[in-house]
Length: 83
Image (cartoon, rainbow, N blue to C red; front, side, top):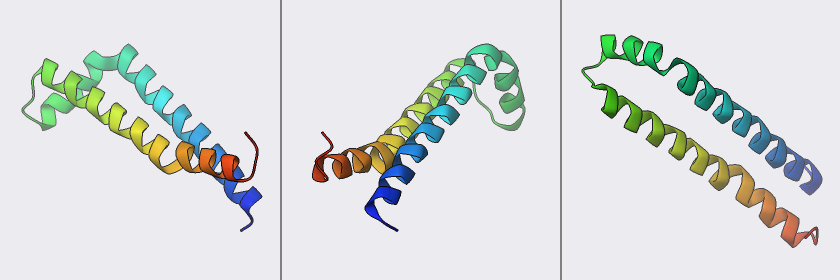
């Protein structure tokens, strides 16, 4: 794999992961009550706890995108003189 391919892979990985994050966030915003009821059947959890956990999960996912895709892409961009 060349550096161009790696850079392209990291960029597209970041874009697709952010799209997934946006879909998950949008789904939670518009269907949070239904999703809460679904998960409350499986786990003993109150609504506030569920909101905190979803917010935490989305935040950890976003940090993972930055850690594994955006920062390495930026590092390659800087090293190769693209910035």
